[in-house]
Each structure stands twice: as C-alpha cells, then as structure tokens.
Image 1 (cartoon, rainbow, N blue to C red):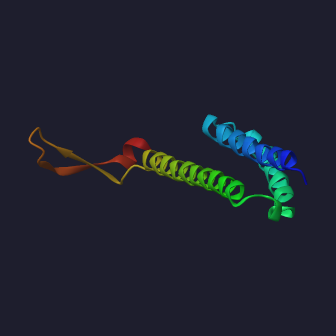
Image 2: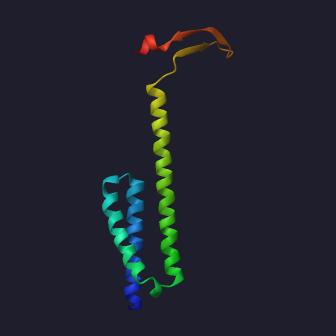
Image 3: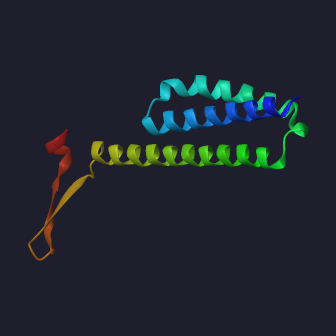
Length: 117
C-alpha cells in the first residue's frame, strides 16, 4: 500500500471524526448514525493494514476518537442533568414552605398538591 493511499485513509477517518463531532455539537443527531457507520468502516479499513501505518498516524486517530468519546459523555451528562431539572419542575414537593423577608420559616406549609393537581 502506497504512502499516499495511507494518507488518504487517515484523512478519511479524520474527516469522519470531525463530521461526527460537528454534528453532535450542532445537535444534528439524525445524521450521527450514518456518519458513525462510515467512520467504523474507514477505521476497519485502516485496522486491516495497521502495520503499514506509523505509530503517529494511529495515535492521531486514537486521540481524535478519544476526544469524540469525551464529547459524547459530556452530551450524555447534559441530557441527564436536563432530565433531572425537568422532573423537578414536573413533580414539585408535597408542600410549599414560606419564609419571611429575613429568611425565617413562617411555620406553616401550604399543600402544593391541592393547588397544582
């Protein structure tokens, strides 16, 4: 396999990693499956001939894929946090406690169930 062919395979993988990263950042999740599938095929192509690639080329791909994985983890954590916030709004506590201007509890509670449900 010629060096130019190796370079094009590396460039293909890196472009797909970049495209997947950009789609995730832009929230274009409908395109992620197709990009991921193409990326997997490109990586498998590189893996078949991995002995013909330099350690640097492989390290660059691994680093880019690791960064992409970190981005997926961050996106997942953001979704979990958003879901938690939405649940807290949808399910208010049983009672609403009231406080005076000094921040002291007024000593009584109003049932939120009766008001909201």
